[in-house]
Image (cartoon, rainbow, N blue to C red; front, side, top):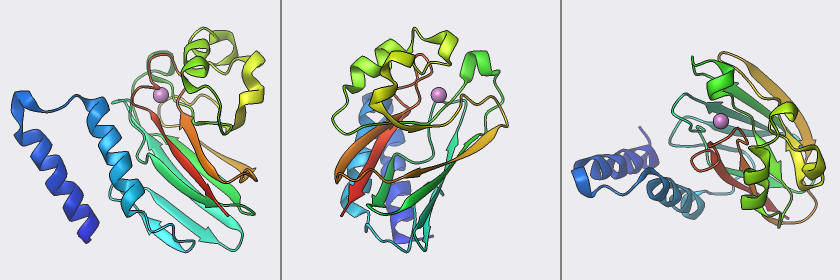
Length: 186
Ligand code: CO
């Protein structure tokens, strides 16, 4: 067990030990993102996150594996990429609930996009698998909506503007817990 996974374990234990005073899930996930942001080494070689998700750069390709589950969580909430890289991102839906009730996608919004507006309008776009056609200009890359046991790998160029980008699952009601930061570096 690495130091970071140990620290994360201790952090989780602390949360669960708080009983009724434990903060809501949204707060703890925000803290986890901040913690990851502070500790992430921004290494171009390999970084294994405390939850087992992996980001591995080979040549100009950044391989990222993310799991999505029935608890409406991604296995990672932070991705670090470099301008010039191609991302090969695999999303796996490891849940068992039917797609109609618990579908997942991975949708990366352009830098500066209105996250709340996108997430809200996506809820109404059932006929487009919750990827509203009139807001595709806000999307850098996305997977299909995946049902239980399904996975998909997508390839896209890292955007050429450094800074933070946000990703989410646009299935109705999921963006609160299924979101994260895609950080682009020079
Ligand atoms: Co989802």
